[in-house]
Structures are given as C-alpha cells and as structure tokens.
Image (cartoon, rainbow, N blue to C red; front, side, top):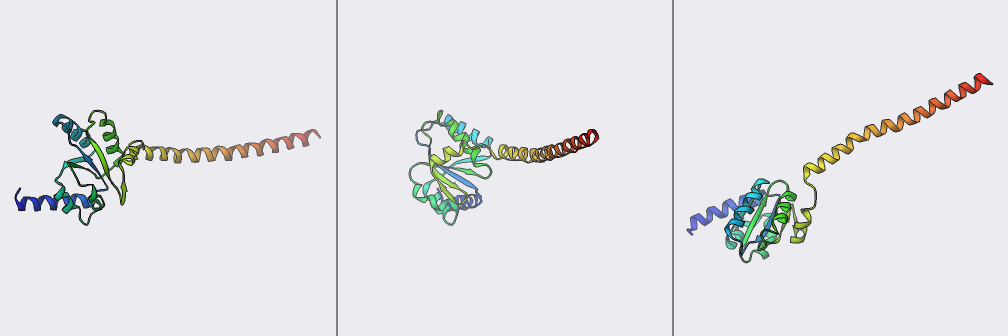
Length: 173
C-alpha cells in the first residue's frame, strides 16, 4: 500500500476512534465471507460499523484516543466494532451470532473511558436497551402521582367516615 494511502487511512481511523462511545475488538480468523457479510449486515442494522484494519495502522491511529488502552490486544487478525450509539444492541447482535459464527472471538474493548473484557461484552447483551429502560422509567413516573392521590384520598375518606360517625353519634345521643 502506498504511504499516502496509509496516512489517509490512519487519519480517518483516528478521527473515527476519537468520536466513539464504545469499541469492541474481535478476532475473525477462520470466518468465511458469507459469515462476515451476515455479521456486517446485522451490525449495520443497529448503526454499528465492523471494520477489518491492519494492526500497525490501528496502533498508529489509536494513539491519543480511548482505543489506546487496547494496543496490547492488537495482535493477529483484528476487526474493530465501532459503536456510536447503544453498545448493548451491538453486544446483543454479537452474542446472537456467536452460535452461527463460532470463529468470531471477542478480545475486549472500551465503553466510555472503561476497558471491558469479552465476558463483560456478553453481559452487556443481557441489559435492556436504552429505549426500554427509558420507557420503564417513564411508566414509574407516570404511576407515582396516581398512587399518591390514592393514598391521600384514602386518608380523606377515613376522615369523612370518622366525622360522619361523630355526627350520627351526636344525633342519637
């Protein structure tokens, strides 16, 4: 590859790595083309990029970015899984395809500023997506005022029944 082309790839890769929320590193050796195509398609459905990158270019591009902490894992055939939005959906896709693509091995990655292992990536797949969690939270918030009014109305009803009993008692006595 020409030096100018390599420099351009490094520059683009560095910009991409600097803007990521999360990145997973995977080894893909032994994976055939149809499996790679399926993997890329499934990941692109959740707005995630799957790129095969030379380790030397990846080492250079990762300098000064969050991905720099993973440089010791840049050995062998590597693919980077670039995540800008929801890392749990990417983890779900990867764990779901693990049965179909047994040669794809997760090496680790980073999530925000934290380094995560392959086991933690698979645990991330069990977490509900951000949309589901926001929906549950809004449901809780919506139910709180109703529960509060029910509690207050119960106390008000008890007070009214007590006053009514006192009124009846005074009328009879």
